[in-house]
Length: 411
Ligand SMILES: *Cc1c(COP(=O)(O)O)cnc(C)c1O
Image 1 (cartoon, rainbow, N blue to C red):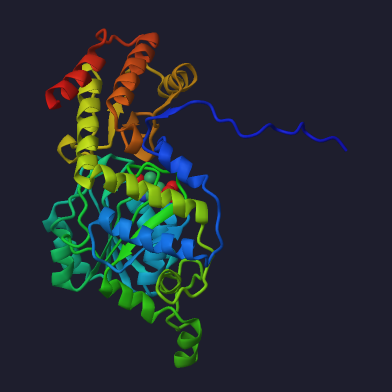
Image 2: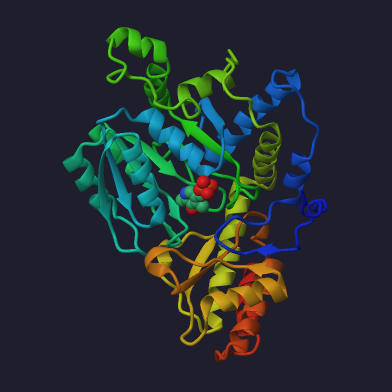
């Protein structure tokens, strides 16, 4: 029997990740993740879990006791929230303005909800009145709405939606994976019942942990559903029983593990916990508003830069997230080949696109650790060189100068 030669230790190439996520992690997050492991119920471990909960209350801007991590990538948080909050047959309304709205609808369908959607064209957001009209018509148990959809770069305003849900008796859930940490977010002030995220966008970590926060009202719903035995016993009929059809994503049980009783559920992913803790810690150490401002500035500089290179920006720019921009690929430039040159010759990754935008736009992110002047300027310089290599007419140093001007004006 022959074997392939034994590979060497992992040795990734140097990359500047300037796509829509994942992005280059804060160095201190990577260091935190290499810290030694402790046992599941070591006092250090449980204290670190408690500390991490409090840090994320700061990140979410909430007093919710039920602020924890779900182990897994962002969609683990989405799946836990929807599967635990929605009983089969209950109505869920999903306003869809990009790819991730379709994902919320799909996950709600798998939870056997009665799913209703409304849509706006890609590149737009919903008005509060359009959402209220649909909520009044559908009367959903849950409104599931993405905040920032990286597929279109749009940032759906949420500040008026909580009051709409409260008026109509709906729970209000948002997927803030792409937006949290780089754009305003106020879980309590906006009346959210549930919100989930991931680390690999503005929070500046790797994918693999999903912060989640639940209001007291949401906790009542998930706790009422947590016991499979109670569900069967009360009802006799397991199909009609109330329990969550997932063990891993049963938020009632996950909260019991994070709560004072520390009831065993999964084994909290220790290295991810360290990483998630550090993501929140660096954000709060710099200051939540300062971090959002840093994203606002990097986004404004990148926007000015790509425009000065003569590129058209996709979508309603007034509602763009700070941390990502979609630019039209100029006629005659092969989008994927240009991205390959950026990666191979410059070590810079930018994003392609999905669905109706595939082949039409690149998505360029300025998130977390990479929401920095040097990362913005380096990316624009490389993009200019690559555009010229593929025959596009671009002004010399136009992008870099325009972006540097934005930084100079802010200094
Ligand atoms: C990037 C992104 C995700 C990613 O989900 P993963 O499971 O971490 O890949 C989810 N939702 C939104 C809105 C995103 O932008």
